[in-house]
Length: 132
Image (tube, rainbow, N blue to C red):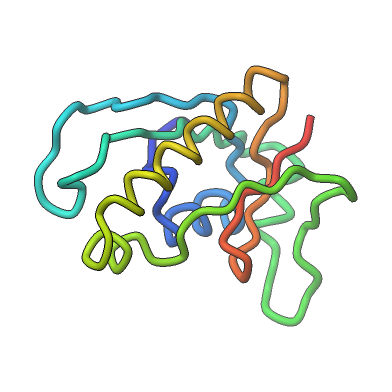
């Protein structure tokens, strides 16, 4: 299955990557153009999630329960931090939110071009974890 989501939305990143076990290696800059509502003020960038239901990672994520070890990233995984609360950042400092969008876009697109894939998400640190 495939779908898109905003790369700066912590809750979506956690659900899609950490809980469902989707992987991402495609970045779409300003996918929808100008948007209103909660997306107003920022380019409508999106990540394309690829969810391979029969993959070991998706199965491990589905089987995870509190108290069990979560699927982990290998040592040396690349970290790309996102704002832990995009809505608050937008309300307090739209320029900082725009800068975060541009930084995350540049970092992820560079890593994707180098063959890296988002395969993990650290919710406590609010960062994507990438490896080949």
